[in-house]
Structure formats: C-alpha cells, structure tokens
Image 1 (cartoon, rainbow, N blue to C red):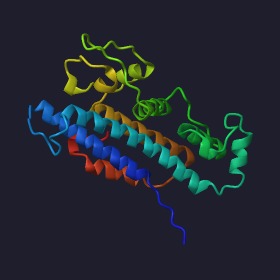
Image 2 (image 1 turned 90 degrees about the vertical axis):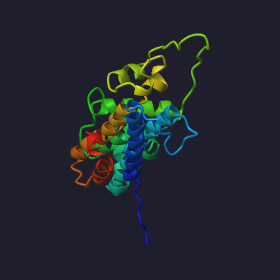
Image 3 (image 1 turned 90 degrees about the horizontal axis):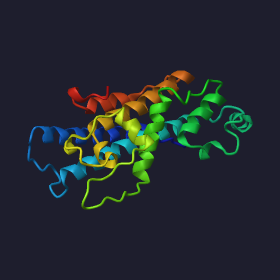
Image 4 (image 1 turned 60 degrees about the horizontal axis):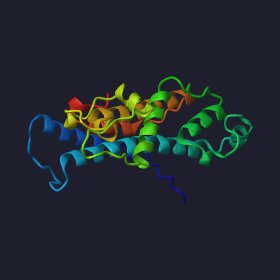
Length: 230
C-alpha cells in the first residue's frame, strides 16, 4: 500500500507559530515587561530576529511544498512533460529542476491557463518573499565598523520591504541596518504569510482547484483575535 504524505500545511503552521512568538516579544517590549520568557539566556532581540526569519522561511516553504503536492496530484495527465518540453519558456529542464515560481507557471501553462503576470500581484509580492527567504538562507554578513553607525547601501529588496512592512519596534532608535535588523518585525511576518497564502489561493482559483485550505483555518485559529493574518 502506498500512502502520500503532504506537508505544506505544516510549513504554514510553523510560520504562524513563529509569528505569534514575535508578536509576544514585541508586546512585552511595548509594555515595558522585564519577563525574560522561556529562554532567559537568549537576548530578546536575538530571539525576535530568529523567529522572524523562521516565519519567512516557513512561509515560502509552504508555497514550494504546495506546488510539489499539486504536481504529484496531476502528473498523471497525459503528455504533461511533453507540454513543458515544447513550451519556449519552459524548455531545457524537467519539472523537478524548475525553481518554485517556474513550477507554478509551468503547471498553469500545461493545464491550459494563463501564467501569472510577473509585474502584478500576487506574483510580485511572492517574488519579493522568495528574495527575502534567499537572503536569510544564504546570508552573507556585512562589514560594520566599531566607530560609526552602519552605512546602508539600499538594495532593491530593502526598498521593496520598506514599502510593505513596518520597522522592528525593538530598534526604535533606527540606528541599525535595515536588513537584517529593522525589517525583522511582526509586520514582516504578517506580510510573508499573507503573500504566500494569497499566491496559492490565486493559483487554486486559476486551475479551479477546490481543495480545502485547511492550513489557513488552522493558522488563523492559532493567532489571537487581535493578530489575525488578515
């Protein structure tokens, strides 16, 4: 007997749990609480940034797992790989080697639907989420001198995040690099989760996929009433 195990909803639950942890740290900070929490040996700002990065990584992992699960569900469609092979945008590899976003585009094309428009939502935000996830996963440290505030060289990613997320309240004096410090906030968690969910929901709409989004119900049930994803 063969049993298929799906995991995309677990990634979203991981994202929500991390986000809730971030929300609690920010709430304690705003209320002036000196409660060290469950891990007193870890400074609150370090714990906070770690949980934000976990939320971002898990949010994108959800998107990636979902498209892989979808492909597994439909890969019995006759000639699906042939459709990939003859399409100009998709030639040169097979599905398992495509990037996550390319997998979504490939499935849409193979099933006779229009692909996402790259310059519009929800593709645009999902692409920024991908870049932020890559920033965390493939992190390269910046050089900061001891005798001066860090000098920022604004990247495209930083500019995009400034337009989308509120800054980290634990660094309210602003004397920190935008990435990885100032962009790490509960607002960033909210944006990451909602961007991932919006993209998957639009994909489902495009292919008329009626699978119940149980993960979203579970995710929202975990968050307190004043901290819903949306």
